[in-house]
Structure formats: structure tokens, C-alpha cells
Image (tube, rainbow, N blue to C red; front, side, top):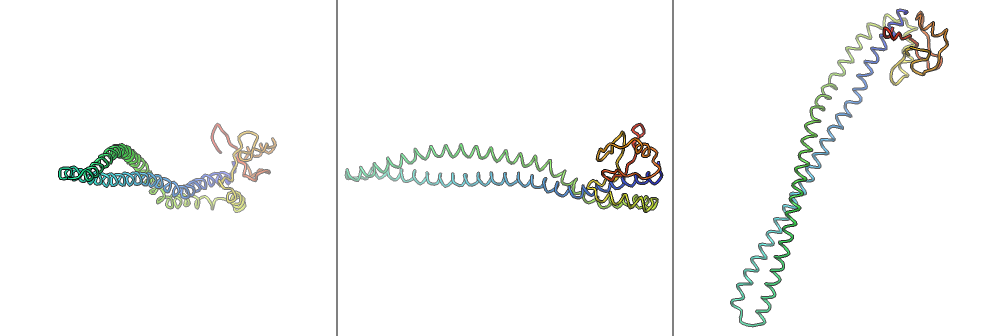
Length: 241
């Protein structure tokens, strides 16, 4: 193969490595954000469940205080029975006692419901706490690893770019100009198409037998008439040449 074509192959390999790092530089921050949001979501769920439990516990305490007040009133009402002198007053206090006893019976049922609700809420808090710890434990190391990679990307790109600077002077302006035009307009950065059979490796256009022979010889730069890629013969028994 023409030496300059070999340099172009090396140049593309270098540029693809640079592109890989640039993509990582674009994608890693969003990956970090996604992992951090997963932790925050789990933490919010835990906080919400905990606040709901605390609120119910506070309501239960208030309810229990009210029950104690009713019990105290019932005790006082029962004591008053001993000092009552008229039937009318007796009937009034007796009715008062019956109402207080009914309130206490209703309160006992509500108290049981409170306990059942608190048990379910506590179980939900425990579940949310376990999920939060799991997600945090899984994601924090990933976040640290991604941040470390983000911090090293610039230096990696700089190191690879030095390899590019070594190759560039070895390629003629004509070849380099053609390569750069194709490389810059491709999102994936691939300017070279490897031909292994009868088709272009990028657009899959069927190539003429004579053109394939010229590609195999590799004496000059040949462009695909359909997609404009630089056509390089791929010897699958030896790898790219």
C-alpha cells in the first residue's frame, strides 16, 4: 500500500481515539447527573416516608393526650355520682358518663388503627432506607470513577494529539486536505472505508471489478463515488493494511 495511505489509516485510528474521548467528555457528566438524581430520588422517598411517619406519631400522641383527658373527666364524673342529691342531676351525670365511655370505646378502636398504620409506615420507612442505602452504595463509587475519568480526559486527548502531530507532517497536503474534509463532516469521524468484498464498507455501494483491483493495489487515493469515503482494501487474513 502507498505509504501515505498507511499514514492516513494511522491518522484515522488516532482521530477515532480522540473522538472516543470527546464523546466520553460529553456523555460522562450526564451519566454522573443521572446517578446523582437516582440517589436524590431515593433520599426524597425516604424523607417523605419519614416525615409521614413522624406526623402520624405526633397525631397519635395528641390523640392519646385527648384520651387521657376523657379518662380524667370520666373519673371526675363517677366521683360526682356519690354527691348527687337529685334524680335530675343523677340522670345528667349518668348520661355524661355514658357519653364518655362511648368516646373511650371509639378511641380504643381508633388507637388500634393508629398502631396498624404506624406499623405499616415504619415498614415503609425501613424499606425506603434500605433502597436508599443500596442505591447510594452502588452509585457513589460509579460517580467517583466517572468524575476521575472526566478529570483525566483532557490529558488523554493531549497525549493522543501528540501522536497526531507526528503523523501529520508525513502526509501530503492533497491527501490531508481530502481526509480532513471527509473526517470533519462525518459525525463518527470515519473518513476511511475498508473494502473487504465488492462493496464500500460505509455506504455499501457495489464497486466495479476494475476499481476493486485498483483499491487492492493501493497505489493512490481512491474515493467512493457514492459517499466520498477514502477506499482502503481490507485483507481479512492479515487485518487492515
